[in-house]
Length: 125
Image 1 (cartoon, rainbow, N blue to C red):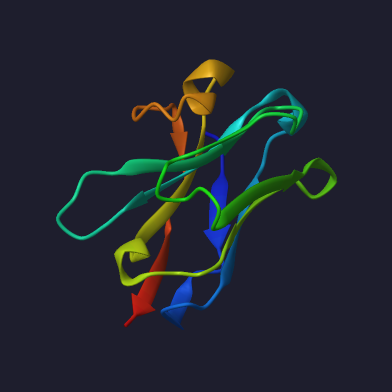
Image 2 (image 1 turned 90 degrees about the vertical axis):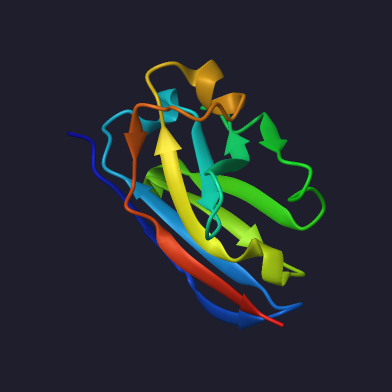
């Protein structure tokens, strides 16, 4: 069983920033693409951002473009999601995920193999 742990969530006012971290207990994490997803109350989970196994390719949902930045530090086995100019509609549980097939992550497909437990982000207006 792959262990994925998210952290960094919390309560922030609109316009503020948060940095989420995702630590993946995987020996060769540099072989795997990683994605961030979120689920708002009453809504389906959606892809937010992904980063390729080598860090060269990133993909963002339209709602995240220009405000969120995904990055990775393989030495720390950690993937980050820097979020700025946060809006109340960014509220939700943020999940980190990966898959045996990198293209599924890079395309932010919904049914990946491995998921963390999530971290709550609340943006107050």
